[in-house]
Figure 1 (tube, rainbow, N blue to C red):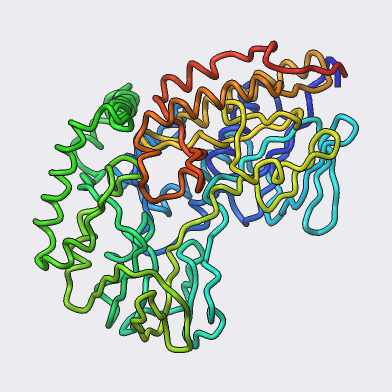
Figure 2: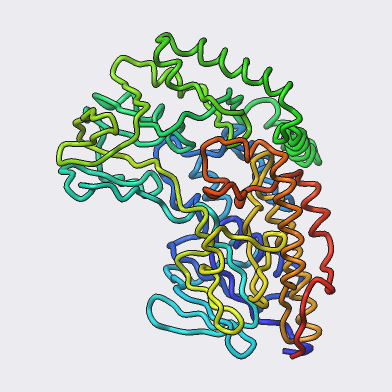
Length: 485
């Protein structure tokens, strides 16, 4: 490979995979292939087609900085719009012809200095480098409860919505109260006969200022060159200013925020018992603050019941809760999230000397900059451990990761061989990261999936996006063990 362009495999064609592919193409690296298990580009925005699915980050900022979109129907774009945007980006930047759709990678092994990929159909291909862009929220999780297979009605996960099931006049149970539930419950509440919302723990829910996209600002964006960029930057900066709220030292300000969110609950829910049931008892900011103007009013309707007990088992007629309450329903929608701590699963990743990544990550995943893992040369991750974004748009972080990976691949094109982050560099980075994380609300005891049972924060970046951009600004070769080609 010395003096030549490395061959690159990219797994996933969502925001992360496209960010990597576009970055490579824009810098003259065209020797890549993208493998996507779905039938189109889009990642989670292809898969999640449940009613009401939309972005919870302003769309002017939730797009690539070099490909701003001005045709959003509202400040927060809908799932179909975001899916179409990603497909257009793939087409415009020449990525689509390089995507193998309906192609699932089941294993990747570092063999004789190259990555050997094994596919679901048994085929194998080898590449000089591997970029994993499988995302954190790609594997839906339905709890393995007793009696799950005995339910006589229809059941499915929100990320695998069954559009053949008509909900009109049906008794429906929605298990979960996270981001997807907050969007889909208001979307279906008007058509169902009964709605039963079973929450494990309530989320803080703020107002969603979702002005339409066809007003004065929309017209000005089209008439005034540079205004779209200004809008993008303004939205990004507004969200970046929220970073101090993740630190414990912001607790005095957080008390004000708590008061505002509790006032919203009192204003939108009449029933005092229901108010108590949907009010979190943990610090705001330790998991994502959801946005909705319709969630609480939907829960307060006469044909809606909200339960604070979790599900103990499933029966032929419905759910049995932990306190013994039985709920008879026709349809169960599982809004029970994903398996975010199982990064890169179910792909079997084998590195140097036969080491297994998922075995090494059994106590929680970790990486250097969320991009590289020691012992796995020329393997790079998009949206890897500790690069989740709570305060701003993930697209910014993805662009910085793609830039860093591109610099590494350019170096490999000059030298050949491989790069493997030094174990001590990775360890020092993660020790500093965890120390910083313990100064944040992420370790304050709140429910959620951002940390392991032992308290190790693995999902989110405990700092500003500016800080991450600075950390990934250059490729420091001294951080890596190198082998010549």
